[in-house]
Length: 107
Figure 1: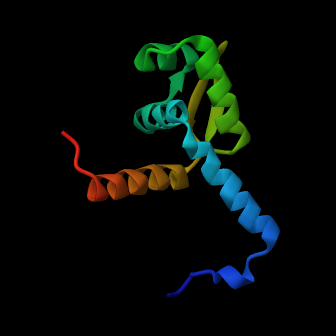
Figure 2: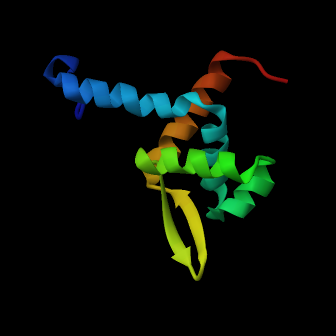
């Protein structure tokens, strides 16, 4: 398969970073934030309202997502607006959802 990287060619540092990256997806609040941002750019207040969470929880999880390059932000006046960092994040979320729906049955 073209473009496929052989596991034997990956350094331990790269493997560690990949494992660390996927850990970020292990929190349901972060997943909810990412899916909300997949639909629209949102500020903290809009995320709080849309997800029915408190501001502190949303801000903390956004910080984790920013540190792991999954979301980015821009200033709109005094407001900070968040969005997904790039199309790779969307692909990861879509493929994860497709895999889960393929393997499990939900009402």
